[in-house]
Amino acid sequence: MANTARPELAEALADGLHNIGDAARLSGVSAKMIRHYEAIGLIPPASRTFAGYRIYSDKDLHRLRFIKRSRTLGFSVKQIEVLLGLWDDRERASAEVKRMAQAHADDLGHRIEEMQAMQRTLLELAHRCHGDARPDCPILDDLAGPSGN
Image 1 (cartoon, rainbow, N blue to C red):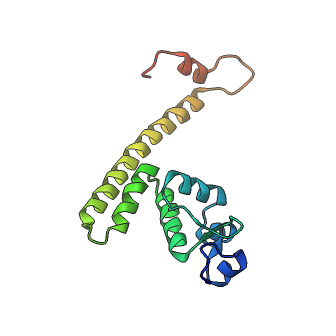
Image 2 (image 1 turned 120 degrees about the vertical axis):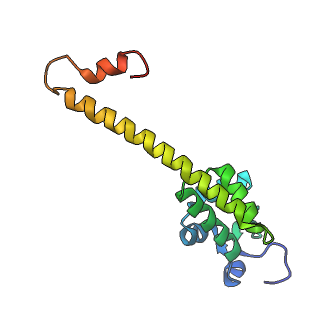
Image 3 (image 1 turned 180 degrees about the horizontal axis):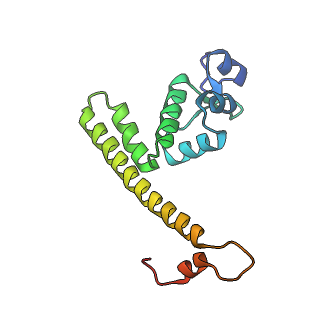
């Protein structure tokens, strides 16, 4: 790139940088989410062209893919902040990463159990409901009943 602090877009693209549309396509993260991740500090502020367009390096794309994969696995934004910090720290011990992953897997297991219990309850209620023209409805009766059923 020329010695300008803010290159022209064509020059930036020729140097292997990516505009936000290309960054979105290559990372699998929407342009809106890229801007959001920048606003909340998960990715550093993007470099800008002379005209103010955001441009991203391959390193930025790698970070976006890391965030996307973390979100796909259900990690929260706060957890991703910690994971990114651990990823950036080449001196870190893997024990902390393993602890986070195990705790998250345990939490997912509990949530799955709760959802399966909800599913069983709904299936039982649906089975008890005649689903015809009559106004009697065990599903609504259950929802209107005391909590803890």
